[in-house]
Structure formats: C-alpha cells, structure tokens
Image (cartoon, rainbow, N blue to C red; front, side):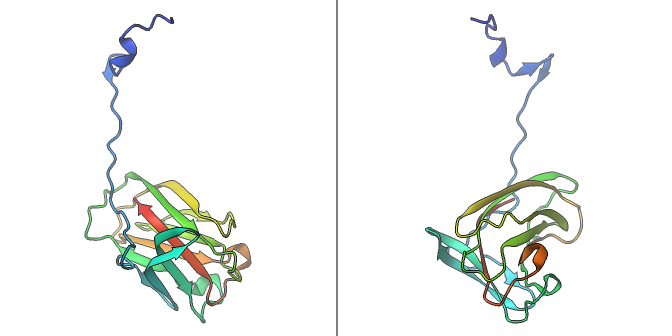
Length: 171
C-alpha cells in the first residue's frame, strides 16, 4: 500500500478542484442518406451513403476531368455557419478516411476548418481506413466551413476519377 488513502479520489490538486474540460461537439457528419450538405468546388462530385473497404455511410469525393494540379483540385465544402463556432478555441477534429489503392495519384489530402489548415495528410496508406485526429484553433473568421481537398501529394499527380472517402467527421 502506498499510503494514499482517500486523497486521490477527492479530485483536487494543491487545494484546487480538478475538472475535466467539457467536450463540445460543433459538427458531426451523417452521410447515411446524403452528402450532409457537402458540395464540390471546381470539377468533380460528392455522394453520400457510399460503401468501401467494409464500411458504409461514407462521403465519396470524386475528382473530375479538369483536376490536373493541386491549384485546381476540387474540394468538398460544408458551411457550418448555422452552428456556434467558438472564437480562438482549440477544437478536436477527428474522422476516418480511405484512399482506394486503385487511385492513379490521389493519396493525400488537406483538411481546413474555420479557415485554419489542419495537418496535410500524406501518409499514402491506401486500401485501408485510416484515422485523422488533430486539434485546430478556431480563427473567429467568417469562414465557418469544413473543406476537404484530396490531391496527389508533393508530386501533384491526382487524376480524374481518383476517389477519397471520409466518414464520422466530428469537430
């Protein structure tokens, strides 16, 4: 016995109450029947209720014929202006993503929320579901959007018809 008694269960540290931060969910995706408000920019398409890799209810992002360089890549956008986005707060972003191994070049993506770029995802793991999780500090900007941009990584070799699937987005 270490002699801690009951002091460890009181929830205090140096006379202060220790509380867990409250989890506030700003947005949770539901792609079970639709694209849940996501739309495509430039050339390509988005489609809800897609299945791949043993998972259902995903958002399918398809790159179009005019997608030839990172500067012209289609992005899936969702406006979250109808929800309260706290200014200058750290929010946790988490979602699953899947790049088919049949893609000609798209094996990377960039995730942007509220004008703040999250990590560029370029682990190039294709043919399996992967988890993305990262804190992003909200900017307080008027750009309350979620943007997911698939691309071909540093070699910018994405091709028309390349796919990205995402699901279970939680911010």
